[in-house]
Amino acid sequence: VGRVEPRVHFTLSFGSVSSPSVRCYTPELLDASLDAAAREYCLAVQAVAAERKVLLPIGFKFFASDFAKTRRGLVEYVANYASVPQQQALRDILSSEGKTIDLRYVSPNWQLDLCTRLAPLRGGAGPPPSSTAPPDPP
Image (tube, rainbow, N blue to C red; front, side, top):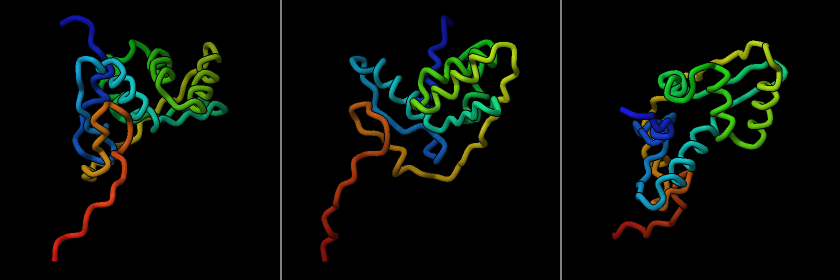
């Protein structure tokens, strides 16, 4: 097997609160869709620069070697997809050469959540747009 595409881990859903959204992927939009899935998954990242603490979803622990070879490399990888405020905090943490990063993992929430785990079919991130269903017939 050649190089692992780490973004594939953001596509594997168990239908739980902590799982990535379920998406449909097409060859034409695959790269953009994988980026969207990574950005959505990384919304759960929390970084506290003053404490040099990074909280990551547990999937980063399970598949750490697919993302990077070192803890620092993992934080660098995550910084590419984290929200803008978290990117800045992660970069502040990374700028302190030689200091240990307090890397922690958040336990998954296995509660079933199929309704909000479905992403729009065009590869975008997040739950499907809300709609008003017609009332049930009498």
